[in-house]
Figure 1 (cartoon, rainbow, N blue to C red):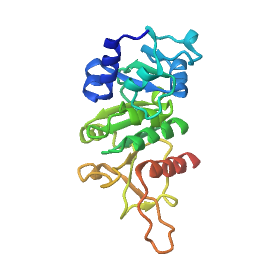
Figure 2 (spheres, rainbow, N blue to C red):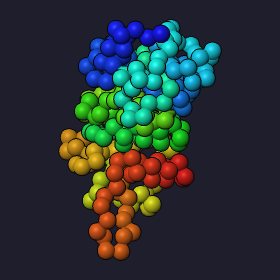
Figure 3 (cartoon, helix red, strand yellow):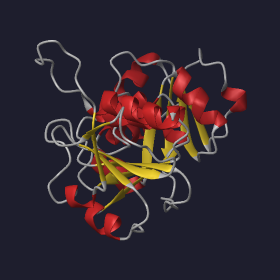
Length: 247
């Protein structure tokens, strides 16, 4: 059974400072933890109620039985679901630009958007995402939940984007989504190997990153009165990546 000291420590992981300090992240709920168990992630602790059915298959270093009331104390969810895991963060893997698409995210602030983009990357077979240093933390609990398990399969790293893009070979196309002045994505030639830059929800791609774009693109609006709000980052990403993969 879980101790009061362990409850206090795990509850502290709701705060990013303590997650960073111990180099861990938190995974919650039956579906997410089932995905975790099937992955190659290093699981430090599993906290599970008696109702959780998969204790015999867990690869965790430590398994703790927990009551529903105590699970609520350590959970970030409004309705905790049987199990919570403490997971060691993977070592960042450098991205090799070799005959593939890579997503670059510039100042994505909403954790749900980042989680959905990681999930989209997994769906479309994109192995790597490079985030600006001021993009929301991939280990934010809302981000982790929004990935629906894709965080275990997609390599997401953080870089100074100006420095990184300076190192990209001149021959490697860099597509960037801009609202005005970009070429209609449905009329643009799209490469099977490229970097695709997605800008922030409110400001788009930052001014210091725009000069690196070799192929500015935009998603045209078909709204009759042209008054529809701009697309959020995750929806724009889904349309763009789908079009790249369709060609």
